[in-house]
Image (cartoon, rainbow, N blue to C red):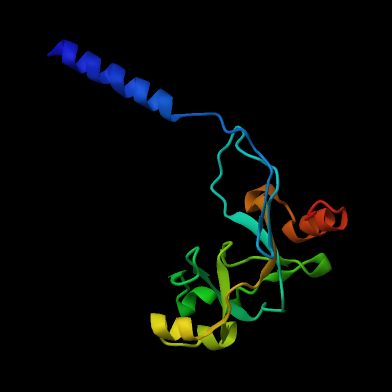
Length: 178
């Protein structure tokens, strides 16, 4: 019996030790998907303290969609896989609009992804709905299925002290090259 507990304890220690790893540097990768430019910038990960923080996405679009509600579609762009509840578009009484950066870039403040599409609903209109529209209604309100011309993943929000000014500086320095 004692030997069984000892063996079980050793197995747990081995499993726990194997599950831990030291985070490294995320490599830079570039993907050109049709007319969209997808860039993942190098970002240090980890350190002494692990902080859960949302990722930072900045992007450019074919038109100004800053007041239109974003939703996420599957890779084939046939189904909406993620969409907000009308209450999700506000923090307090302020709408969660993207922030305009230098040279026409936008900083995401909602949690969009590469498969983002924009609905014809404005943030103001959608936030005043009593409930989420049906999937059929959401699909019927897609304004643009391929709105992105550039997409950059820029680390985590916790990596920045003043995110807007720091991102603008990176943009001005040409850090976000196609």
